[in-house]
Length: 265
Ligand code: PGA
Image 1: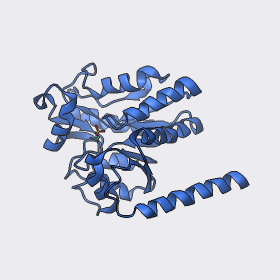
Image 2: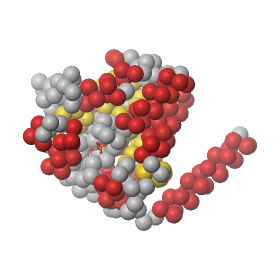
Image 3: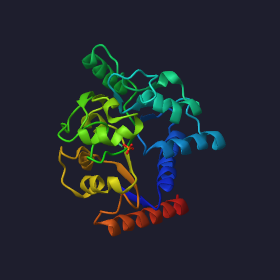
Image 4: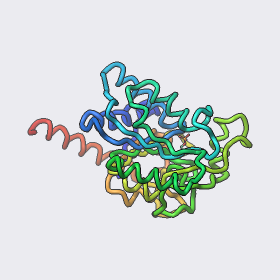
């Protein structure tokens, strides 16, 4: 894993957006895996700015979101489809038919989940998967105990997640108890993962993800098996990491290497 620590959440957003923008410029018809929650909002804001001010073109981009609450209509203010419209899609030139969010109100969830996986395959697979992390170490809604080989399916939310997400709803009782979510196995198939975390409440989960053992109790730790993961953290989220110095050395080497490539190539 490549671990990058920025001073503030704003800098995390700018750095994350720069990775996404570089991909969109290099491969205009790329497939992005997108995430919801408080963490990626700043990244989406920066992508909108890049679109408006620098002409970043999303017209050929395809997107697949990680998850959706069961029972919420796409127009529900707390649905993840609505979140994506408000925080990104309505402000860039992406084609609506190329944006995909799991259906939280499918009549046959098993068929709908299989079809979601099929659509990802037909699109050529996900080039870059953006990820947040739960305070319980989940990626997407793969709660502790989820199979590390899991595919898109229904998942019951952990109480910790329901409490964490209650801030977006009028009360804890209104948070749906289930979600449709890509599985850990689905996420591991993406070509590159970009995991973001900000704030002290994520520090323990980040330590366990990066420096702990791989365990289904911290599903983000399965990313240790992925061949290309970039983790961008703010100081608070990075505060419990023990190998900080090494990560900084790696970044220094990386910058030197890039300068050399620039000079010679
Ligand atoms: P957050 O959620 O960005 O709102 O903290 C992250 C997650 O639960 O994956």
